[in-house]
Image 1 (cartoon, rainbow, N blue to C red):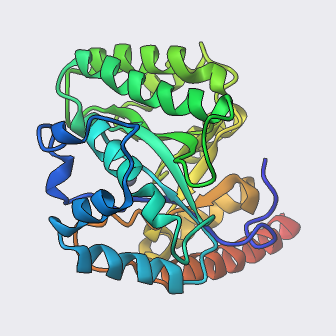
Image 2 (cartoon, rainbow, N blue to C red):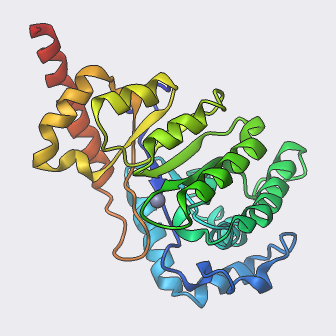
Image 3 (cartoon, rainbow, N blue to C red):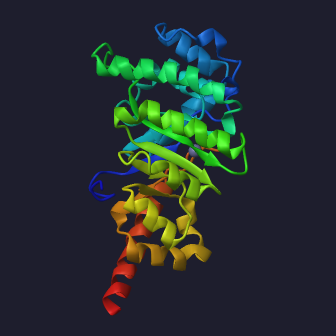
Amino acid sequence: MASSILSSGLCDHHCHLFLGCPAIEPDALDELDDLDDLELAEAAQVCAWWQLDRVQQQLKAFADSAVSTFVLQTVSLADFKLHLRVWPWLQQGPLAQRLQLYAGLHPFYVHAPAELQPWLETVSQIWQQQSTLKSSLHSPRLFGIGEVGLDKRHGMELKLQIALLDSLLEATVAWHLPYSFHCVGAHSELLALLKHYPQVTGTVHGFTGSLELAKQYTKRGLHLGLGRALLAPQNQRKYQQLLQSFPQETWHLESDFDGSHGVYDPTLLPQLTQHLTNLSASAKQANLRV
Ligand SMILES: [Zn+2]
């Protein structure tokens, strides 16, 4: 497990930058296919036709917050390509070295199994570039795979989602990158699939499950993602019980900021950290009393 939340600096393990941007619609980025053509002026143009002010406002809120690292999750090939396109531009500002890019294929955004192949081609290309020193300082760098996962309520039929995730894991597991898993109503299916990939590490995004489920994931070496749900008064008892069993290091804090409305709340991660520390302390005292 990683070092404690505070000693390693505040990390927002799950946020999005461009959700809501029309460019994420599958057909809109056709003209941006050429990965070698990462021109800064064009990158700025991509944002310009989707409210540059808005993106800059979001980036400023990121930059002004106490969070030292932002893990940018992506949901589709189009979303990932948009990040690739603006990456050099992002690296020129105050967020340089503070952003970690993940490549994802979110179940909401996949409509057919055939979408995996082009995603894999692009993501593999970036992976190969960074593995063979072809990349420059400002080249996009892949830090993880996410968000990916299973959702019983949205997207393709569950068995197709499982098959796609299986193929995605098979193709990427040798890269030894962390994953961010979205999972709704399909935890037993995800755990069953992960049995075939014991080397997989990462986070179960937005974990709100039971103590038993938490045990199964942590036994697998996965972290549990924790967001706003931690602050809800009705959840205090539940999280205190979870924190009695799982130390702070188990949890990865996530704003789950989705970029589609409002601006990043710079107070959220510090609030979550403080609350987690307080609940952990009271959980420890409760353990001593047992
Ligand atoms: Zn997300």
